[in-house]
Length: 432
Ligand code: IMP
Image 1 (cartoon, protein in one colour):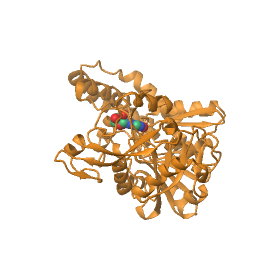
Image 2 (spheres, protein in one colour):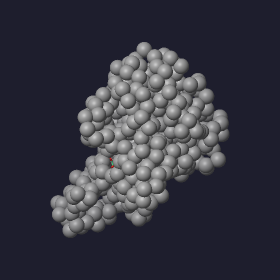
Image 3 (spheres, helix red, strand yellow):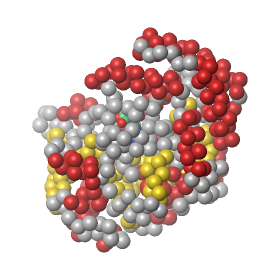
């Protein structure tokens, strides 16, 4: 039985949470494979809004096993808060499983993230300041603290104190930051450890067994393709690999187990933080898209930068993820525009044009969008019940995207509620 990967095809915030939420209903296991509390998935269910940072949205369905995989980094305080928040609202979390191999974000990671952004000044990346980069850096340097370290209180305290002795030096000497208080922090970590211990599991084995038993597994990426550490717009990226290939390493299954990769893209583009953005809108349309689309970050509340749809960047996402289908979200946000520019190529500094994403950063930094202007539809999409009921011009917009990318658009989002997603075929067939 296949596993399905859901991956952001742009710079994150594509509305993956809602698509995962829909498919989770038809799945048995839902896994996060990378990232940490830099992600924020907003799910609106029966008028109630849920904001999840660590826990896969499958948790809202009883009986779904929800996995936080080895490729994730976990802020234990944040995770405990999320668990408590769900339990308080009557949503049981007993089916949550956390990989013992995932790394923990420690308070010094958060402090160093903020301090190094301050030091970078104008050159800052615009991180979410959740300690993501420093936690992954320690993982790569093999000095990180892993979830399984919380299983033994003695080991945890020892590792914590050893790490802090060094990190306090870094904070004080490099970042002019007061040292963190070891005793108080260690006590707090032990409290979190007590709360999280029951959820720790061998999640690679769990997912493998689920697949062998013919159960349906969803692998949910956070952030998006262009924020990928290896293939995104470095250095303005996150410190993990959101692209689909990383689902296998992040969860601990082989690449042969996956045969469906669903990309999620907005009908336009947004980006949070710094970095080049060829189709960023200049002028009053920027605020219109931002306000109609409520483009403010779930995690940081930051205003998102908004741009017209970029097919060059999306073609790149199709390539590096091997997308087998695409969900286009927030089509309704474009309903009030008479004309819709869509970027079909980049003009490079040497005057040439390309419809492939530039391999060299300087070309991308200086790329100018070449637009094709499509007619807008100006009708609200609230009452539309099926893809073939979309206004003709809206249908043409979606068809244009699908043809340009040579990928089927299997879902179209037309509003914030979970029932505002139109599907081209039964959701169950996408979910596997
Ligand atoms: P970090 O992941 O906090 O280190 O931030 C690195 C870059 O990724 C910054 O530009 C962030 O704004 C961006 N980023 C991280 N997580 C998300 C997300 O979930 N959505 C959109 N952008 C994100």
